[in-house]
Image (cartoon, rainbow, N blue to C red):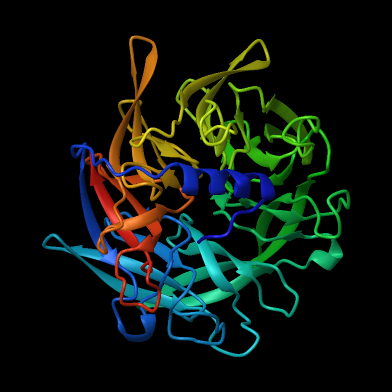
Length: 447
């Protein structure tokens, strides 16, 4: 099972897994197509177990990463071994073909990092991503660049996180770029604050390139206080250059068994000095969500939308099965509204972990890690606004049938020009890979 990042969500996971089993199969709400099942090649040289989603280039090709598999076996571990890949999927006559662009850890000590996360393109068409383990012994993550030249991709470590100097650790999420080409991201732990113990409470960081060299700056170190701690993966910028995100824990430390239920925050940039402002503090009150596992997104009006992995309705052992929420700003104050509370009812999903995405019509799409018609394998959902009310539709319930994927990864879905949705699952797909649960796949949903 993919790792959970904190005790509170581990409890929610157990509740959902063992309490949400259902056997009814709904009528198909949308059409799903498996584009690629990982570990289809011998020894999983094509990769295994993606932990992040996919992105498009201008030609309509898909790019992503796998945490396992690849041509290099220095990482060891249970099957399938390997340190992960960066891959490309190329469409041709309705069929997608995979091409491995880079396999991590070509030598001892893994100087290039291992276990890559999500990708992003810069304006020049180069790929950037993070790894959860870095180049030096004791390192806890890196930022890498893949440069395309003469039909070949070359990897370079842009930054190696070193916690013993107050840097962040464990960068689980993707990066974002501003208009000037600077990159921003979060680390789950690390930083200059020690209130969370020697591991730190997490950071927001910036990478600035000058004369071909990247320099990292920690913009904010989280603390065990009302500002939240353990930031979720996924940031977003507003037009003024301020950053927005969420934390898994912290805020009101009287809630959620004394660890706090998380916050939505803004980092305000004033002449290069960054200050945190809490926009919403989540509460364990039977209505609000708790513990957001991913960041927020903007609509065209400047409202923020996100998910929480627990909270909402009293299902899932009383902790709640998760929510979709909206934050609306008026006169400098943000007000929260719950758009949907997930339910353990044999159809709906539970434990949403990925960022949301809008289509051109203003509909919201996302995934849940658990729930659905087949027990606890996850769903793809749509929220549509009609007459001032948001209505949820389950587009697909993942099926443990040896072909479909299981457990969609905690990255946002992407849409093509026709409105089709694309994503990945951590397990499922091909079961002939040394893992009886399957090694993950890339899927397409036609709403």
